[in-house]
Length: 192
Image (cartoon, rainbow, N blue to C red; front, side, top):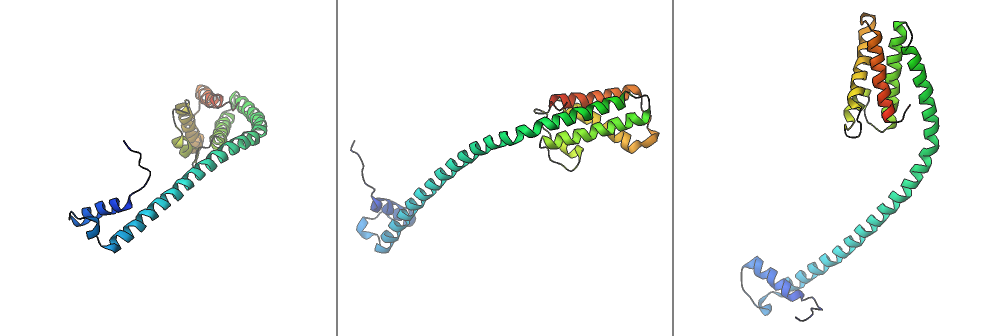
């Protein structure tokens, strides 16, 4: 087989002309204008293809460069900020545990509400979107958030406490179970 080292535009234009008109013609029978403009369109198409290919390659190279450059900067920027957040979270959690261990029901209510505020901070720091904690929990993926059901149960108890007022009777068992649910969620994300 011979190597083809040229592009025969006349042949391509002839085949297109035959396809459009349905006539089986020879090159001499095709109007000059059709041949001229057909060749111009084909050359323009090839030129645009090369330009777009170069643009795609350039864009891909820039994306890879920016991703790698941004990844290194993101890691260096976040590392110093995480340590104070964990220390702050631990002292907050200790306060919540102390309130839950109190014999007073008002402290139990406050412990649950504070733990829910802490859950909201955790969800926001993890990048879950939503105006409320409920919306953020809806945005969560159960495959990446294994204690999602516990977070929902604990948040439901918080809603009952917040909306039930003094009419809702809390037991020590309910409080311990709820605080334990919050604790397991926080432990999954190394927040406490």
